[in-house]
Image (tube, rainbow, N blue to C red; front, side):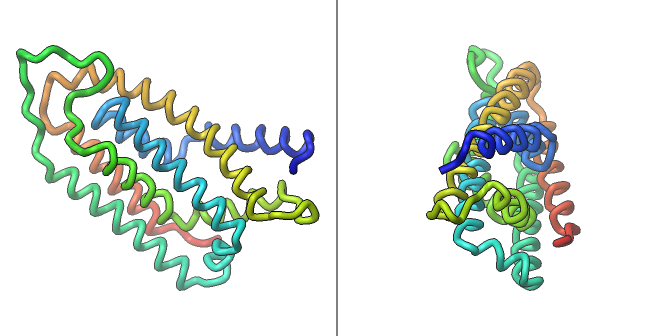
Length: 215
């Protein structure tokens, strides 16, 4: 499906793009700081699921709608921004979890994550899917590595998206473990700093998305 030169060039470009900090990095850091390594990992799985969805949408031509329709772009953009801001406000209003001073600390995680793994995963999927700039990025980046003459264009897009997702997952796992270990040191102190940090990041990401332009 892909020759060695094309695949090598794509993997190098994808790795460079993945390791440049962006909104996804901020999302993983916030989730890991608030709920530990496990929550960060679930968030990473959610974002990379969204990556696959965007890759498939680009391959099927759905993302082209966002490039040609200002209305579609604006609707998706403001829906994503509103969702992030709502999550941020909800996090700010969440009371701190009670701390049991007699309990043994967990060996692998921060004992404060009251949000289920399923909710973290789904929130991350929705957050990733509702970012129209990601869709436009896939529409601009992936086609240069696709060869229509080799058939099954949608499958080529999906394979490229899967490779990008794997590289992104590796980066996110490293972030989750690093930030999760850091967050565990402060978990015993209780307080609302984790919820407010998470909420602030969500609101900032929402505002950033709201002011983005198509160009």
